[in-house]
Length: 145
Image (cartoon, rainbow, N blue to C red; front, side, top):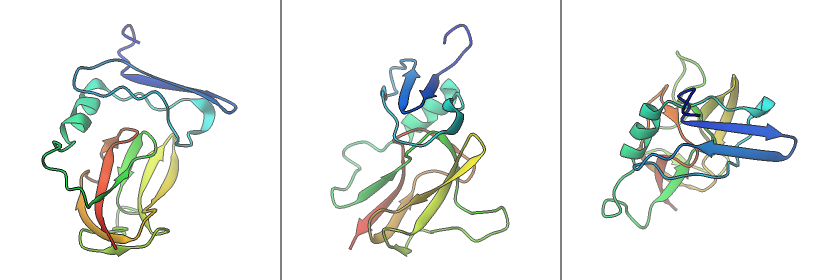
């Protein structure tokens, strides 16, 4: 991985999956992914993108206990709209239901719709349109009903 400047790589064969990440002091190590990534390999993420993702995680003191976190279920590119000229799926202040699509994460040219999985009101969007996201990265916070 060092020889090829890879920050992470995922290999999938059938139902077996291996996710390898290089250790960075500011980045937690993730050993398993629940996202569906076709053809077995995820797009390697540069170390700078991984550092930026870890810098966006709020401190424990800043987190509110009553908010639910919507996390990225896979590595990919975050999109808040289905197409460049379309309206966003959700905005801060919007009420969502468990089956409401909140965004798309593109991985290996596959558009994966991400659903809220709980009902409530979106209070914060922690990533920007077109930004690379990591597995488990918090992308939205919502106040549950």
